[in-house]
Amino acid sequence: MLAPVLLLPVVAYVFLLVGFPLIMAFVYSLSNVTVGNPDFRIVGFKNFVDEVGDPVFRKSLLNTAVFTFASIGLVLVLSNILAEALMREFRAKWLIRFLIMMPWTTPIALGTIGYLWVLDSVFSPLDWLLRTWGLLGSPHALFGPASNMYWLGRPGLAMMMRIKIVVRRRVHLLARPVAILTTRIYVPMRFRLHPLGRPALSHFFLKLSAAAFAR
Image (cartoon, rainbow, N blue to C red; front, side, top):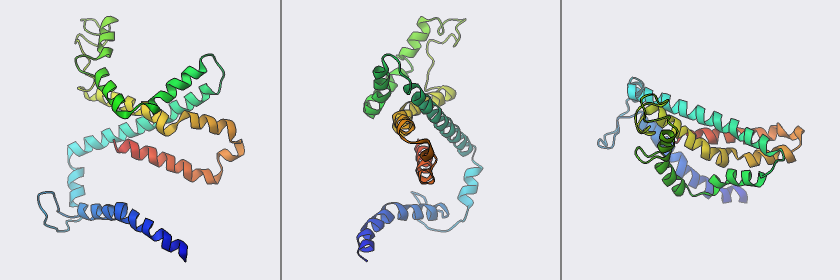
């Protein structure tokens, strides 16, 4: 009887912190409550029907789906490629490992400042390199006559850069090729698909999907 008593505060805390707001969000979604209108009246699925009929919502949903599946797919593929590559012996392997782990140890704020500079619409070093190589800024350039690419100012380029940034961090933070490498080296083959490992694998995919959708 002591164990349930000791777990009760934790269960109550989790319910009040996560469960109650989740229930209220579901109830509010079926009502006419807004920030400026505290009146409460159940309207059923009218809010959902209105959102589905909104072209902006459909466009946002499509962008979210493209971003999520593209980023998850690239993270899984690239993490396995890195793990397979690191299983082989080659010169300067320590340097490659250092470069792989460096984004994991770099503060997010510092990485954000770096990306803001790299993707700047005027002072981007990528644009400077493309102009130097003759791929941008001339009438017959591959990427057009404009002097800048405006990476975050065009919908297609903005989506590509956003996926690239997330994949760059998630390959090391969520997929962790080093963890995959360690599993393949030290875990016997018969344990890799053991039933006890399936919930952990499912949790990994759920966490990765939730992290992608959260962005």
